[in-house]
Image (cartoon, rainbow, N blue to C red):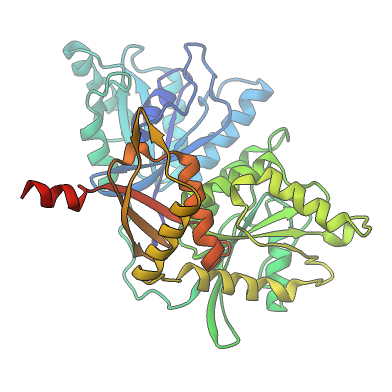
Length: 446
């Protein structure tokens, strides 16, 4: 999969960036409030327009004149988002008119040399839309009058944004298993890569966030071509200098998108954190296979039960990844590092498993016999047959009398039954339920 372009929404505080973000991604993810500065941390989500997928980043307001320490952190995050973006969507407020703050942000954008699309928000009527011409003086091209709240003008704006995306590079995709190494800063991603390679391919340093870009390394492992992707770390909340590292997640997201298997590194000393679960959630959304790698195991005091207790902790914190293998390693000493690539390649093989249709339907009938489908308002769910529509990831289609009768718990039950028979180690399964008329009732109507 090619990298998804990144669009960073920037502008002064309270010009409507979070409202536009919610509009573009189709969900109310960002908090919107009339008090300036509500958005302090970054938000990112996937969006698509006319079949083109991209990542949208919401940033805090750029108040370059403020000396407040919190605003300085917000400023750092927004500036890094600009540096990482493929296109910057600069939002101004047509009701406020052109301000000194807009001019200061414009200077930052000129220095970035990034493609900029200018949007004049809150243009809720014709006079306000006409007033947007004032922003031509910023030297950023045509201002697009929009209303993020009401959706006015956002289609034309998105047409311009998508047109500004860099052209995809032509070239043959390497027939290799792509393995991305991701995790929070300073969990040992570059150290693991170097230990696997046996050479200093990436800089290893104790300062979190040393690796700022995704770094690809091509190797051959027992005859299998492999591309290892080392990515920038993701700093957890609460650190003072979190701006730069937080936005380094954007490169990591693109690495995840083009990977087949993701190695999610966790710091054994700190344990599985909410931020680890956040990263895991994106891996799951991207339908990528994953191996959880608990690094720095040499630093943990152990007894007979330590590993089992830690495994239960990881399963509890990453409870939606219960099908994922967990390895306990030390990139520093090399302990169990030799198991990492074989496990990742095994997971990739499981990702490509295809179940014959007859066998799949036998599993389905056995599952139904052991646990009858649920009913709702007197109507019982009926299954007619199932087929595997795709691999990479494994995708199954179940034809039923009414998809609305499929409870999430029964869907999970069917997934577990598939895993009982075929494993699918470390690999997410996609289960789709489609309506189909009962063939018997169709015959009676003939």
